[in-house]
Length: 149
Image 1 (cartoon, rainbow, N blue to C red):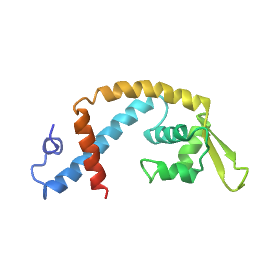
Image 2: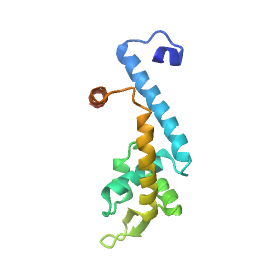
Image 3: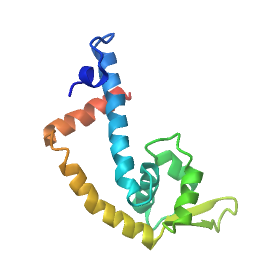
């Protein structure tokens, strides 16, 4: 379905405006799908992002500031997300030995196990997006990178 059909809007100011509206609309579409998929596992897309960041740095621990700087949505409240994940025993917080003001955050074995389940799910989820071939996906990524400059 075209962006014009989806929004029931025939005219845009220009093709760049149309493209930007399409990116925002599509991002919201993917976010909504992600919310539904992660809800089954009791987490949000933002919590999933935190877990992936921590797995990527494992076994090195990260501060909330480091996690926040790596998040997809930089406006997310990383402190709140970390606390919710800690309560679910998916990550742990420990006072840094070198700087008592800093808290080190690491993923737990339960968090790693959850991500392992989600990795399997993610593979099947990605299969449903076969509308793009590899070259088109590369081009899309390059164009999106170009828009952020």
